[in-house]
Amino acid sequence: MKHIHPFHCASLLILLALLAAWATQAQNPQKVSKWPHGVTYEIFVQSFADSDGDGIGDIKGMTSRLDYLQDLGVEGIWLMPINPSPSYHKYDVTDYYDIHPDYGTLEDFKTFVKEAHDRNIRVVIDLVLNHSSSQNLWFKEALKDEHIKYWDYYVWAHKDDPRVQPVVRKMPDGTERPRRTNWNLVPNSDYLYFSHFGRNMPDLNFDNPKLQQEVFKIGKFWLKDVGIDGFRLDAARHVFPDERAVDNHKWWEFFLQEMKTVNPDVYIVGEVWASTEIVGPYLKGIPALFNFDMGLEIIKAINEENGSQLVDKHLKIREFYQSINPDFVDATFLTNHDQNRIMSSVNNNMDKARMASSLLMTLPGSPYIFYGEEIGMQGTKPDQYIREPFLWNLREKDQLRASWIKPRNSTDSTVLALAVQQTDKNSLFNHYKTLIHLRNSSKVLTYGDLSPMKLSGQPALCAFVRSDAGESLLIIHNLCQTSATLKLPQSYQGYKTVWFATKTPLLSSRQVQIPGYSTVILTK
Ligand code: CA
View 1 (tube, rainbow, N blue to C red):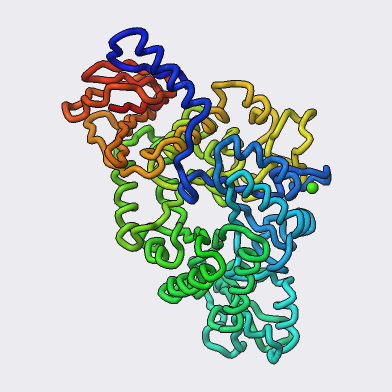
View 2 (view 1 turned 90 degrees about the horizontal axis):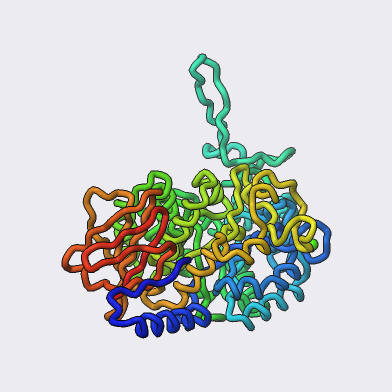
C-alpha cells in the first residue's frame, strides 16, 4: 500500500496532520464490523498446522496459530469436517459426536473454541448430514437387519422396485451399457440403498422423524456441550432428493428453529452449490448462503480485465436474496476447498490475485477466505491438490508444516512462505491483511449499500459507491496493467480525498488517474 494523498490541502500542516491521523488509524484501527459481517477463514485442519510432527495438521497446531488469525483480522473460522471418518477429507462421518483421532480429542477442541472466543473469533464447523460414511455404526447395524432401528436412518428400495431397475443407455455404436444410478445393491440381499455421492456415502433418510431427532441431538451437542457458534451445512440442497426442493427449504427452517432453542444467535451458512435462483429460496432456513455466482463473476472480470458488468450482477443477486430474507448474510468468497484456488484461477498472476482480493473486500458481503489464499497458495484439481499444506516458513525452518501429502502446487519454489511475506510490506499477505483491517474498521465497507458508477468505454475499470448512514466512498478498481484516467462526472466531484490506495493515484478536481492493477478509494 502506498501513501494517502489528501487532495486540495490548504497547507502542509493540514497534510501532515491528516497523514498522522491516518497512520494512527492504520496502526490501531477501530473495529466496527460485527460477527457475522466480518471475514471468516476456512481451514482444512489436516493441512493447516501440525503440532506433533506426525505429518497431519491437528487441533493443537491450529490453536497455536490463533494469534496469527487474530492479527490477520478474521472474526470467524469455518472448519472442514473434524469428525472421525475413513477418508482424508472427512466428508463421510463415522461418528457425529467425536473428533477424528488424527486431529486430537474433544478436550483439545473445547480448548480451541475457548481460545478462539478469547480472541473474539467465532467457530463454525462443517456438518455433513446428507449422508454418513458406509463405515458409520448406524449403517453397519442397518445392513444386518431391516428390523433394526437404524434401518430407517437410510433410504432403501427392494430390488423389484421400479425406481431401481437398471437403466440401459444406447451408445452411438449401437451397443448398450447400464447407466449409473444412485442405488446400490447390498450383496446377498434383496435391497438397495440410495447414495447421492457414491456408494461409500449412503444418504440419510430425512423422512424418518427418529433421524430428524438424532440430527437435532447432534446439532445441540456441538452448540451447547462443546460451545461452537454455528454450522456450515454441507450439500444442503440434497438432504431430500433434488426433486423435493420445497421439503429441503422447509427442513432447514425446522432445523434453524431447533438450534435456536439452545443458541438464539446460532450462525448457519449453507452450501447450496447452484445458480442464484435455486439458492434464494433456502434463505428462510439458512440465513447465510455462499454466493457461488459472485465468486465466478469476480474471477471472470479479473481474467477478462473487464469489470463493467460486475456491480450490476452483484446488485441483481443481492436484490433477489433480499426479497426473500431482508436479513440475509451474503457469504461471498473467491474460491473454496472444492474449486481450483484463486491464484491458479488467475494463472498465477500476482497482480490479478491482488485485484481479486481487493474486489472481494470492497464489495458488500461477509467474505470468506480459504486458508493459504492470503499467501498465494496455488492449487488445481484433483481436490487434494487444492488442499495442500500451509507454508508457515521455509521448509528447513517450518515446525508446523503438514506432510501427509506431497504437494504438487504449493511448494517452496512456487509460494513464498508466510514468515517471508510477513517481513515484506508489499507482499500478498500484507495486501490481504491491510484490506481486511481496512474493511473491519469501516462501517461503509462492512455494511454500506452498493451503487454502480456508470462508465462508458472503460471496461477495465470497475467503479462503485458504497454508502452507509450519510457516509460514502467511491471505489475504483483498475483491472488491467495500464494506467487509466477516469473523468469524474459533476455528481462525483465531491469525492476530493484519497482515503486509501494500493498504488499512488493522481487526483484532481475532475479526474483521477488510477495506476494499472490498483485500487483507489475516494471520500468526500
Ligand atoms: Ca499432527
